[in-house]
Amino acid sequence: MKYIISISFLFALSFCQEETFTIHGKAAFAHGVLIPDAKVMLLDTTQKLIQKTKTSKKFLKKYGGGKFEFSNVPPGEYILSISFETRLNLKTRITLKNINLDLGVIYNKIPFPKYDITEYPVSDMKYMRPIPTEPIPEDTINIRHILVELNGQANTVIVDSITQDSVYYTQVKDLAQKSIDLYKVYLIYNHFGKPIFQSRSLKNRMSDLQKRDGYILLHSGDSVQYNMIYFGEGRIGPEAATFQLNDDTTMKAVYYSLYDIYKIKSGPSYLGNSVRKGFITGSIGIGSVIALQMYQAKSFTPLSYYTPDFSPIRRETGQYFYPAITTLSLCAIGWIAYDLYKDKRTNYMVPKYEKKPFPRNMFVFSLSEWMWKNSQPVIRPIMNSKPVKWWTNRKLRKIKKQATKRKSVSG
Image (cartoon, rainbow, N blue to C red; front, top):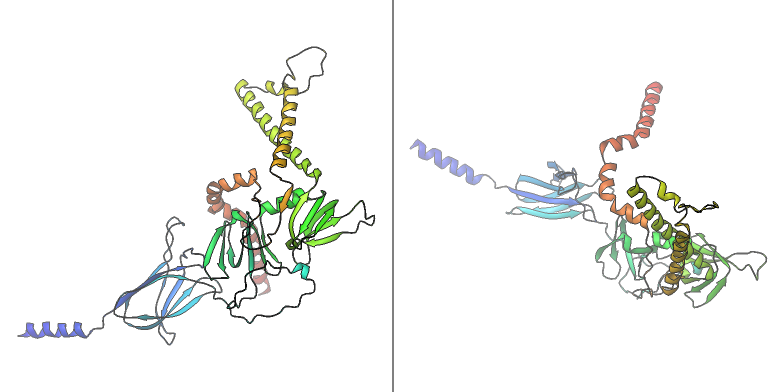
């Protein structure tokens, strides 16, 4: 009889005991990178702490991570608090019912602000020309960004962040969140002409056009002939300064905003850049052949074959000197013909309209950039290693040590 009473008591006790469940999820930044070691707290509706934990660490500092879990939680209303170590920490109310709760991935997204559209005072409209866009009646965002790809395709977006290799943005028209590889982007500037990002291809084109003659075609349809052009930072964004050396003896510059320029076509002087590329290409080719010959001969003797021979006696030295000069000349002529065929003298700056690309892609190949990009899988782990970080932070440690000494002396 006693055993029956005990079993009945335990059964009743377990029946009366409140059932508990599990809450789990992941924490991530807005662009999707999971966050390890983030502080996660479960609070009741009066902000009283119920449980606290940290998100899981990444495997090999690269994979997974960001997970959190609370166990033995009774049903009810709770507040979940996650510290992202940014100004966008999160607090959200959750409801736990009679089932385990999977919160999925929680992001520290920036909510879109709702502003009243305002007319901004503009002193010089030449510097404030936005790309014409289709009017959106429900749009209440004042400041937008124009993202121009290398092919001239332009989109009106809100840029969230620019990382080492990607741009994360939200499209203004449908608020869809997207991203694009940074190497595909030509230019990003805001709706009123402030540059956000200028690609190496754009900078290289401005550098090639510098100090040359040619003409500018503006978005207004006007064309401007010039004898010399310079690029620099203007009051708001980049601008081009043109000079008419023949007609204007005062050397007074005429300035044009980069955002008012559709294209710039350089004059015949641009072919000097083709000659330079031909010399570099030919030098690399000849240098590779000399290096191979020296490696095979195990000596520096082949180097003398390419030096000019001024001795009156016929010798073996300098036998490849004139073929090498001919190779350099042919490379220069080849680059001139290629640049003329591809119309490399014409450089497009800012597209006229959205969704209307340039006649050709504006990408400029760079051997150094290509080598740097492909070496990152090897270089990044080295740069992030503890010995390298210890060496790069040595000055900061010295400053902190000196500050500690001054504080102890003053105290």
